[in-house]
Figure 1 (cartoon, rainbow, N blue to C red):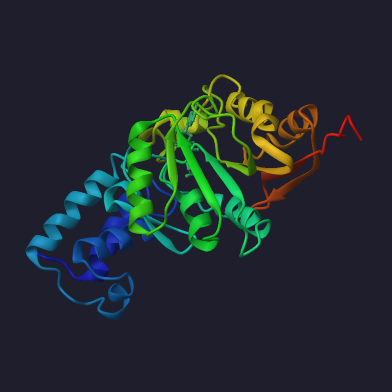
Figure 2 (cartoon, rainbow, N blue to C red; figure 1 turned 120 degrees about the vertical axis):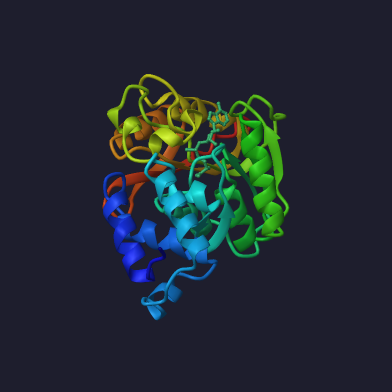
Length: 286
Ligand SMILES: C[S@@+](CC[C@H](N)C(=O)[O-])C[C@H]1O[C@@H](n2cnc3c(N)ncnc32)[C@H](O)[C@@H]1O
């Protein structure tokens, strides 16, 4: 027997509540996907009967959600900064918190700037692609250690018709000794034994994208320590980090020659992004 749209959503919401804090939204997104309609359709036609095949598909995809498979992997896409990105199990699912990092980076780049930017650990490519789409004059290079992430990021770049140079690299290792005006990164930063890694959808996401090691600070340490070698004088660094890593990140930046260190808060009022500027070295011949 088939079901009405509103009943089907209620049924799925009750089940999904066991594995998600956004059960109703998940249920709606999955049904809209099965119907191949926008979410608004569900509110316009709540009493419409689902076809047998749609009801069958919906039950199957809700079962997958309960495994739990994240909605972004089931739909194969996720919105970020009002742009749609293809998502696969190879890469971290874009997070709304990362929009803060993009916003702060955009604020520091003039609309007609031709500056050189590097995105370290690009994953789906969201940071590099959004920056290039909104500041087309910049030259941007994006790296990841994972080849599957780079394939996905290239696919997303092609989809959004932007040109980005992608390089497989362990942080800076695969780069020539070149200089950038801005370094941006949302590196892995969760400590390897943190219980958070076992919660919600996180077990379904790549560990490489989530945790860099025992302390959670390993990637941030490497990125910051080598950043001065890859930045022009007064170049900027913009880093996403854990809400409890603000002080450690600031200390690392200070120890490696950065000033104007500022921490920024996300929409939950948590310290999540730090920006800093390389302090200009005095010219020894002056
Ligand atoms: C937290 S995810 C961020 C992905 C994407 N930038 C975003 O904001 O959604 C971290 C990314 O860093 C990559 N990564 C992990 N270790 C790396 C390393 N040693 N060198 C380069 N990239 C690395 C992972 O593959 C992953 O794509």
